Length: 462
Image (cartoon, rainbow, N blue to C red):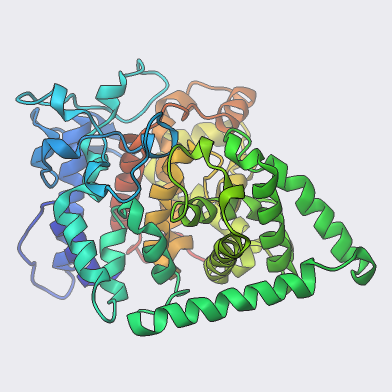
């Protein structure tokens, strides 16, 4: 992240600050962003200690003092965009946010703690903090609209905005730009997309739409494995059990694997297509995701959506090539870094896991392989991926901090479990009731620890 990006995200959080002087002093923009994030988290945690001896205390105050204000008409649960009953309004971004502020007008909202299995489950109203509404306040929408309307989008500026969440109806355009699939210049954009979509269509005809007699044995085996994995993709979401959806996944994955022989298909890549598929389908389908019927879309539209998914997946994995090559050394390297980071942040948890003989590979390999898609409710995935894509080439490094923050959400719980209990717990984490509040907490801690530890010369040596 550049200093300009740090400054923008500091302003988005409502922070300011003065620059520090001296060659050894941290960047003032980074310091502002760090301090504001810390203040936001302090307001949320109210007296709770972070792992790593970072004590946070603050007097009770409303959430709205630490984030941009928003008017009452913006109040609607963002999770309901995909799962609510009733009419879907994909282009009415002003109505999408977290919380039900109308019932709390004139009073301070509840201050939630770090999610913990030891705590009582909070009510939905308590869990929905306005922290998660940052992507939907009118000031941010205006900034996105202004940036996206320029003849040439400034990608660094767009990354600064996207890190804290993208307006849902803007996601298709923003994601294409962040991944470098669509060009920044608006006058070239449609032409490039049309050409790339035709290229995908040609690849499908050349590699997928052929009889097995024209495939090698390895290609037949790979296609069969993909066909087996597609029905297993996001099994908790009924939409992905649709036969047409699975056929689209199969075409995308097989075409990608054939055109990327260094890795070929690796189990877990099927999960990585799903956020793109949902986001690009939203441009054409309305209503509850579970009621979507892609058969109403024309073959040309389906082909365009598949092409966008294919190229965005390719761009994403270009920055993580060794994560999916033989033995997946890139993922093994991240697992090692995660272990070292947890040891530095929360030594008691690290020591307990080591004493119990628990290896990080036993749970964290899947986290990195599937980018946490299997660990959180699916309606939170696109928000998480806003930050992923905003990180750009720095994503693998930042994934370590997100995973550490995710794991240490249950610091107290883990220290009470023995080996077998820990394995079962980490493979079935209690995130089913998570909302954007919990996810924002994970991201906030990840950013804080990245700012605290990443500049240390001895930290996480390669």
